Length: 214
Ligand code: DX5
Ligand code: ZN
Image 1 (cartoon, helix red, strand yellow):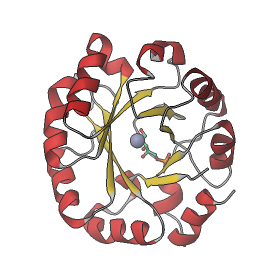
Image 2 (image 1 turned 180 degrees about the vertical axis):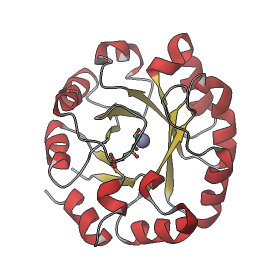
Image 3 (image 1 turned 120 degrees about the vertical axis):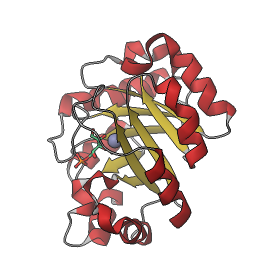
């Protein structure tokens, strides 16, 4: 099974973002994970469309945008415009507008992902599993990088796999390192987000290779 590594720039040096992105892509990362937080859906604020636009200009890497914001349907068109290749929003935020969000994303020709926080069961997103390209299983409470992996969340991976065997990507995000990545891959995840483990590593290339290794 081929696995995709999506380093989260939340742990990168924002003053040297272009250089940081070049380093991880040369080291084997195919995607770049951009965490968008609004201070409402999660208790933290990060970056918005201007940053996505600037990153788009300096890399051909696949831009994986993770929206941790309320009312995602209002902002999805701006992130499409900014150059995202995939937009993942949270089911807890889209509520009754989940299908609208998926349609907005897919009708623009890019990939759509749906995510659930640790306390949200897979049953909440079951009706949408066949409409999305990616399901993001949060393995920490969203909001901050550098938190500890919650093993219980990994059980959702096999549940998703059995409910939607044809789903393209099952992504995990939060506390992913050389050990926790193995738990997730064994359960069926094929896309790993990693912030601290990649960007704070002494040897970024070795860190990415560790995530990719069997
Ligand atoms: C958390 C973010 C993650 C975070 C991951 O809310 O969605 O993408 O940056 O960071 P690590 O890998 O350090 O847990
Ligand atoms: Zn994320």
